[in-house]
Image 1 (tube, protein in one colour):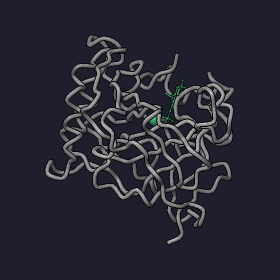
Image 2 (cartoon, helix red, strand yellow):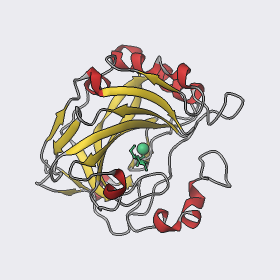
Image 3 (cartoon, rainbow, N blue to C red):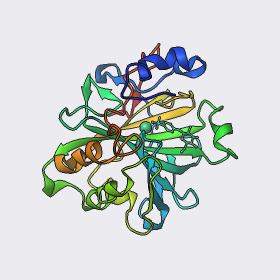
Image 4 (cartoon, rainbow, N blue to C red):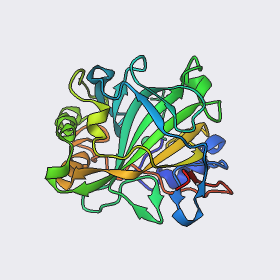
Length: 266
Ligand code: BO1
Ligand code: ZN
């Protein structure tokens, strides 16, 4: 088993314990060095379908004591454009965060800067019959990553209060709560410029680290109040409430190994 909180099972051990994938040539996350990013005119704007549909967010779960995950209705939510080939259906989103006292919780970094949190919306290429098949395709998944930056309450999108109000109900591993018709993806992404992003080919950031992900990391962060950010590191546990809280559930940055990160021409 792997973990985030113990040296004996954290991400520094994954490459040896899970050698098939976690030590490959296109691992994620990475540090984005903005001076090395290359312009790519094929990186057009995205089309987002169902991001305004509150019935597309099904439930919120303490996902295996590793993260908080919202399941998405892939018959209602999808993305296309953005330099992706074809349609990718939305499966789930989840979050990565720190330990509350430090402001470091994101997986990707920009010029070495780590944000307090990162949100990942996981998509699967619509032509694939299953996740197993998609994970064998170098572009089978598209993950949209959004940094979360701490701000004062007044600019926090209202929808983050709705989302975080469920955290105390999913304290224990496996806990799940229905959230249908209460939250929209657009509401959580309110105020974020979704036209400027980084693009590179990478992997899942957790075991089995499959190298099947077209990564999009948006430049503009979501602004969420520090109080609401702190609820993640103080509400959800790795197992029961007698065990540690889920904190610092991010992987360290991986070597680019010759990869080039792209962005739109300015
Ligand atoms: S991430 O976005 O790179 N942090 C990431 C990490 C792990 C997964 C997805 C995204 N795991 C996969 C599971 C599949 C599952 C799929 C969608 O997520 O390996 O079994 O179907 O939920
Ligand atoms: Zn993730």
